[in-house]
Picture 1 (cartoon, rainbow, N blue to C red):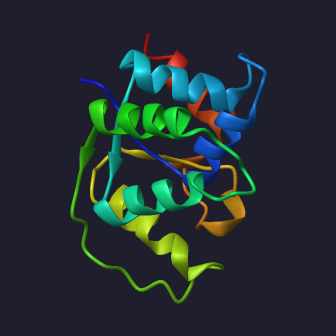
Picture 2 (picture 1 turned 120 degrees about the vertical axis):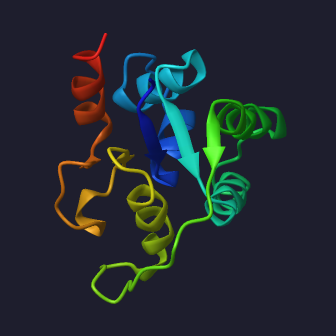
Picture 3 (picture 1 turned 135 degrees about the vertical axis):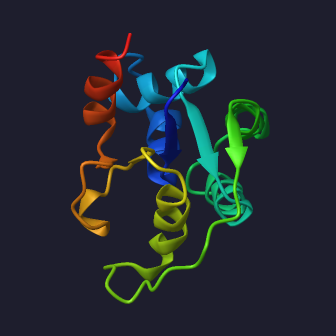
Length: 137
């Protein structure tokens, strides 16, 4: 069974901005398209992905945005998580990511902003996720 991974928006943005195919963020997104893991997301998260990727400051092409979003839908599963109390998070908007992650036992939340989430072995950086999943091949 493939592991479940929630991808924080910042990982997707960083992967699309990176010109280095060996960067951890690019490897995470490549592994998603190769089916190494299954993405988990909520409708609210998916809407945020689309909103952020369309920000003018990034200048991503519509084609690149469509490919990224399609990749998540094709290789992922949409969930409707239970709401959590976000008052303890540095950024309460990140609660939607934690909610989805907590709804699937054994899933990982991969983020470039570890300080925005509670310390947990399931909340990892792209580099840490690569190390964890590399041991499963």
